[in-house]
Image 1 (spheres, helix red, strand yellow):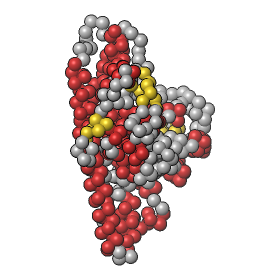
Image 2 (cartoon, rainbow, N blue to C red):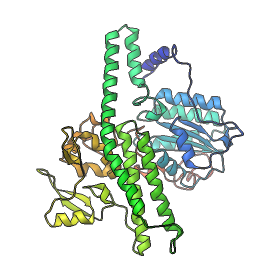
Image 3 (spheres, one colour):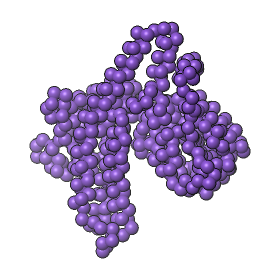
Image 4 (cartoon, rainbow, N blue to C red):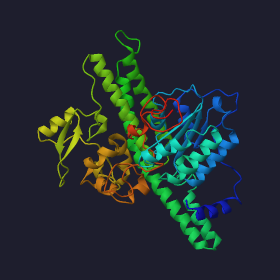
Length: 453
């Protein structure tokens, strides 16, 4: 949001709104956060989180002011103030995975400070310079204000939708409000009505796409739940060990996450988190089966391209869609046999706009988020090249309607995750390595940060 647009927006909204930014702080007597998910849940609603056990470092009013600064800048910058005894091992990587948003993450942990970011949002050099410059500032308020002031200037992308900013399907689009405000100032009532119509049309299109996806995703969740029901495993059974129980627990957690994510989905791109959870769960089941049979643990592979319900792929095979070029796709053992015998694979079919059922890669743009959760951003373009779905996802307009982050479909708006996008665990772990827990991240002001703290 530009400074001029922001002034217009604030001038108009100031006449209507009296609510300030909300940060997730707590009274000194509240229970301390004990896990990464607590921080991630708080970040879903506000860019600033202060652990109750560290509330003496940053007041609620100061945290609110920093949160407001980040939200006004419309940038994906996350800040947390945590106690010194908060678990440090792989802290940044765990927080980034749990939060799932491409952005910049700054953490004050006791007297120590460090930051990490997705390189698409902020370069490694920029992050290192920020930590070096502000890591030695002793006062928490001064340190975080200075860090945020520079980070919001440098970061690319926009704030995540869950903060109620731009692009939220349930709230008011801040960018649209700025445009509406400018139109109202000059008395453009007709243009205002057009903006409202366009916003309603876009919201209706997204709802329709989500409902189409909901049918397919519910089928997937049901199929996965049936797999769990058929699983003849009991944590207390003879021969069960801790590794088996951990795999089983992860499989159950994935099922619950998938149901929860789908219930909370308000836009098509949020479906990616659902299918990613199902894929994670099926891999846990494959590991559990291997442990019980005494065989080697399976490598992490993409699910079967033709129908992810077939489970993790076992090999790669050559395949070409009708009239298309041949490409390498991950396949299950049954589809590998069919292809080798010259038969058609058992492809997942879904409903098209005309009502007929077609393989998902021929059924329209709405199924991109569904496929993206299963196959990730880097793998998907190669699998879908030359298909109807792949061609649609290469369009620069696709990201606006169905979200970005599906990989390089031609370098347009949808090429890779942008700042503020939900990518789940699909990110480069190297961007978040080191930090609190030992590593080689340069800069900082002492403590456990490699080359710094």
